Length: 435
Image 1: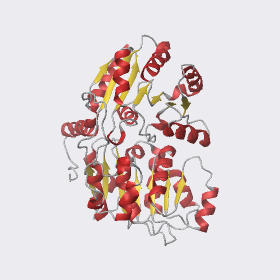
Image 2 (image 1 turned 90 degrees about the vertical axis):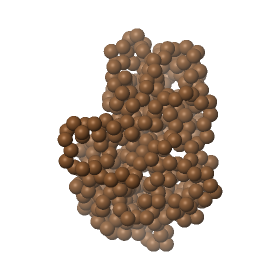
Image 3 (image 1 turned 60 degrees about the vertical axis):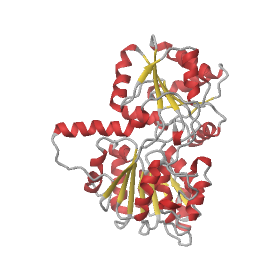
Image 4 (image 1 turned 45 degrees about the vertical axis):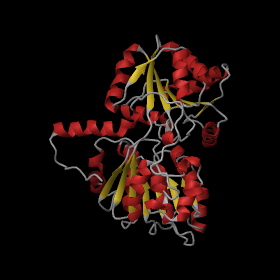
């Protein structure tokens, strides 16, 4: 385990640590020779691999029943779960997207739930509605306890009635509706909430409204005597974050830094130059028709109103396309998301709304129709592919004057980004990644 770094370092050393942290976070993205098939990677292969981490047989069996790729733990799960189960400190899980960090914090949570006790015993806080929906869905498959979702856009009327009649064992939510339910006594008491998770903690640090809502929830409503697990895929100077979490009083005990990136798969990174802005759609259509694989296409928020027209144009190419739009109602968003996850749709058009919340293992290609704003945004978009040991690829469409931005992201993340041209060779290269 790595200890918390000294708080007083010269600026030059601190800057170097920041760069090294980015490299550690993204090392798994470094390109390698393409392999035509890779089985999901597990840290151990024995029949009782989950039990060896300190989990009860019932919890281990629940994990295995999630699917064939969950028969054994991934490296980050093997690294994090024993420490969380021992519960001698709070924890920070630092692992790339798609590495299995969600189960690393959910399985120890499930072990602590007493379904015969009518009390809210655990709380999972997440930054986006889409991520909350997925985590709640997994939890309901893992536990006999009741799971309540308190997500952005919900009226909370139904949840308030439910909570007063029978408190849920676990609440999964975004910080603002969670805080509202607590402020308005919708959740009668959180005194028994002894296990708290804050996933994507870096996103709360970067957003004032989220940060304030989370701060109030952790300090005003949740008991100080608790276990708190934080998780992140991208944060500057991750080894300094444990001390910051203590200073903010988000953690109530020393925070153990848990990280393992051993043996994780590579992502193939490419860029294609677009001769002029109006040619972007033509380039996208060329590649989607040529590659024909499960693809998520990310757009800048400024193009939201154009997504339905772009989807219509792609459908003319016999592509099964849907749009995940932040301005749509919650039912439409859920429908589009489920259609892609289930395989009814092969191409999903979206914005950074889905960069932290879309968990569809079948995704083999991510396309950046617009260049991401930051290296962190690039990292999270790329993380929608190559999940749980699979292969994947990222293709960024850019103009000549944007090339340096994409290359700068590659340098910061420690990955090589190759230039490709539309044609059978590039299509075969990208399509083969997901095989």
